[in-house]
Amino acid sequence: TWAFGGSHTILLSLLERLPRDRFRIVCVPYAAHSPGDAEFIEQAAKRGVPVSDARIEWRSSRDWFRARRQVSDLIRTHHIDLVHTHDPHSNMMIGLGRKRWPAPVVASAYGWWDGPMGRRRLHQRVERDFALPKFDRVITVSDDMRSRILEGPTPPERVRPVWETVRNARDASLALIRDAAAAERPLAGFEIDRAARAVIDQAGFGDRFVHRTGHSIDR
Image (cartoon, rainbow, N blue to C red):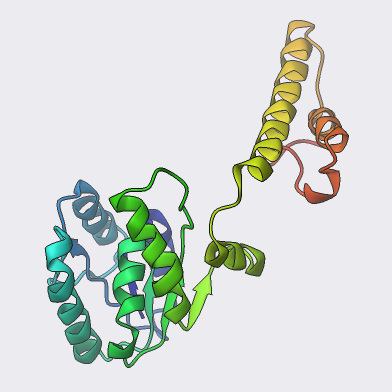
């Protein structure tokens, strides 16, 4: 499996956990201007993840066709049987060139398509409308998110009420914590969750929030 682009932390965690007796891992970084690529190589070496000496040229859009040829060569050389992409540029390159790849291709999409129209927005629209539909599979947090990514950004008038509710719930929790601290009163985790949930319930979103407030809070 060749994992191409995306979050370095997630990728390193994945590579660390894949059983080496079942997967032959080939890690080929970009040759790009980003300092994150050098950091990724260093962190991979520390974790014992093998990093190829090969690099995929990706310093500007002019490297598009050279990068595609390098991907083809990597698939043939290493007998790669699954290609996974993550960032918008990688998703576009692999998705638009789908017929070139003998292996299945899987995308993990960000879905960040809001913002002013411009060069970046154009890339994101191409990713959404032309590249992602050509993948064998698009992986997101849920099937619902996948459909939303392919549909496009959620209208702001639907997003803002949810955002404001979460913000108000957070503020209610913090106010309770501050008051308890000032009064030197012990505070249990369920009380913090209850303060936040009261705001969420009042806004009509109670049935959509199934996770308790915070992580590893006390009962």
